Amino acid sequence: MFAILNQGGFTMYILLAVSITMVAIIIERYIRLKAASTDTIIFLARLARLMQEGRLGDAMSFCDRSQSAIASVAGAALAKQGRGKEEIKDTLASAITLQQASLTRNLPLIGTIATTAPFIGLFGTVIGIMHAFQEIAAMTGANPGQVSRGISEALINTAAGLGVAIVAVVAYNLFTTWVNRFDVDFEVVSTEVLHLMTDQEATV
Image (cartoon, rainbow, N blue to C red):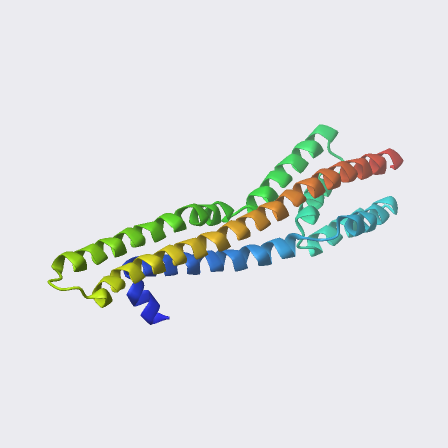
């Protein structure tokens, strides 16, 4: 491992730092999105039962106990029970915005890594080719071994840059798709919670 890093030159250490950062973000985002996920149908069924039974306190506790994103949105709305419909809608919109910001945190950084990693590798490639030509210029006789060091440095950087970029692109696309599915859940939950709260007020 260290032999490859040394052979690739200093840009390989940059790519190593970038890849470590990327892996840390991927792990953190997976844990966060996994915790924020839940079965929307089951959640709404349990919440609706509590609301229909007039157990608002239990409904709020049910939302507070859950780490899911939709529970946070629903809980924020339930805390406004008795307020005007427009105020509840504003609360739902604000809660959704906060959750979206939390769910997409650090994703732009993965996208940046996906974009810049190939260029870092290309930079190392150019340096490796330059070293190869310097060896050729300094040689008085043909010595393929010396030239191959520069070419090897170039190829290692190219491969490393592409490898980091490929992983980053795949991770970014997967997480973006995952986050986009939350938007549908937020829309469904906000509509259903608003209806439940309206029905609750009508029966009081």
